[in-house]
Image (cartoon, rainbow, N blue to C red; front, side, top):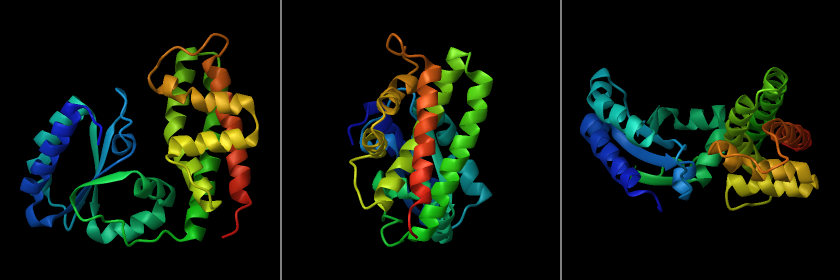
Length: 242
């Protein structure tokens, strides 16, 4: 998986703890996001989904010490999802789970998403909601923080995940492909022909690592470029046919 040794060992430790805590109630443990791509950064969370047949207080208390330890050691995060909730989760959060289906590694059990289909109308509707929410929240945040460079860097970093996932979903709905959500967003920015949007997308890694931007680039200009790109993606999503 091309992960740091401590992360690989931490994931093995978590799977063992989950097996011990949930026993036969444990269905699957799935790694997703940048860690599943082998693109984990020092500031990235190690995101997992733990799928169980039932969730009990006893099991949660049993796994709590390991989960607390690994949250501090490798930034492990997990979503506890009942097996019976998988289909509902995909329908309720289709953009998120469309991303997960493309960027995942099954650490234990069978692939819980292999046979579940996300209906196109549901994915389109949720994509529009996600993009509109991103646009509205970013406009407010920009107005509040545009003169605070550090806060703007944080905002740019926060926009990376949802915009990349939305970009991947939009590209898929348009019948196109990209190697990852990161490439999908860059592909859409390039296709729009706006150099400032492409530059903003390419500076997202710097924002996530809290590294200085190149000379002449302020965090406010990067965020505004991302805001304009999000508006462009929303317009494209609104043109999609269910």
